[in-house]
Figure: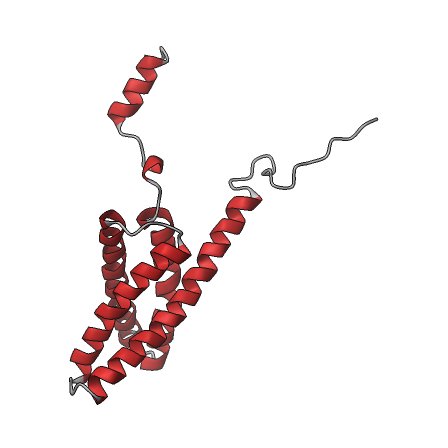
Length: 166
């Protein structure tokens, strides 16, 4: 009796993703993490320069550093982490996700403080909660190919009519 060889790249029956999709997802996640570490260091250097050499206050220096680091993060994540093209649509979405991350950071820190945790524990909670949420939003929304958008009811009705399923 002859046995069939399984295609190792083919998804198992009932699996939601195949190995190549999983590998691609993990590649994007690791690049996103590396970019995050790099951009955090970049932010620190820009803030220190602004405060030490440009004479800005700490809030102003960090504000300049945040804006600069966000733009650098957008470019690196778009081109390298998600292998996309720089585009107004992705930049707009990236900025929305960044604003949501900012709001999440403040909310998590506030909740940790009100719950009686030390500020360092709040920083850790922020550091461990923001990146995964940001990555998932970027992966499944910011850089989602346009063809993967959810079809409208009008599109579904047109498709049903074209196949005679009215």
